Image (cartoon, rainbow, N blue to C red):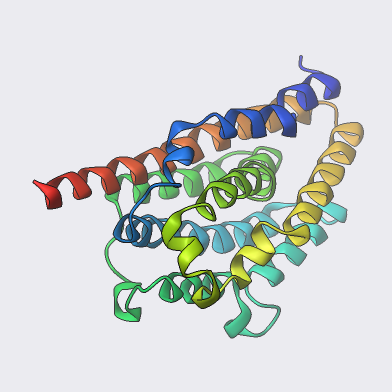
Length: 238
């Protein structure tokens, strides 16, 4: 059976950051065209929509205690703490529009393979123990995805189009997801998960399985986006 120490060696933040920093797709963001950036973030938008709802489902499944309260806090922040204008999905949409995307394009159809992945994650969340779900969507969103987005941001902001239009871009979504707020969420989630493993040593295996699945599915999700964006760009230039 995996120990708590082995779990944290597997889920080491620096190891994950090094892996993402070497990712060719993320480095490609430095040279992506304006149209490619538009399409990429339009496709990512649906992830944020599913994430808030999945966290809500996870709150319902999690027993009373610190972890449940933390999940509820994250849901509240995702949804704007009572103000839909400051919900994370609205801030992401404002960022996308500030890149030059017409508002009417926000609801365009999304990559069907990614919709399947998101629905698969929801099915796993509902069918597996809450400890698995905590790693799949809790750590998956607040730890794995946070590090991915931070690496993405570091590459994205070096893109010539982004540098030339930085003053016109609405950075509020990034101020959260590449700033101290999400870093704090990462630490809060890890502290709560560590306490869970101390209280319930048998949960380590379920947490490890959920973490690995989250990492795999996130990689597949972004790979689908990059493949679609590049395919469409090739077709347009042909």
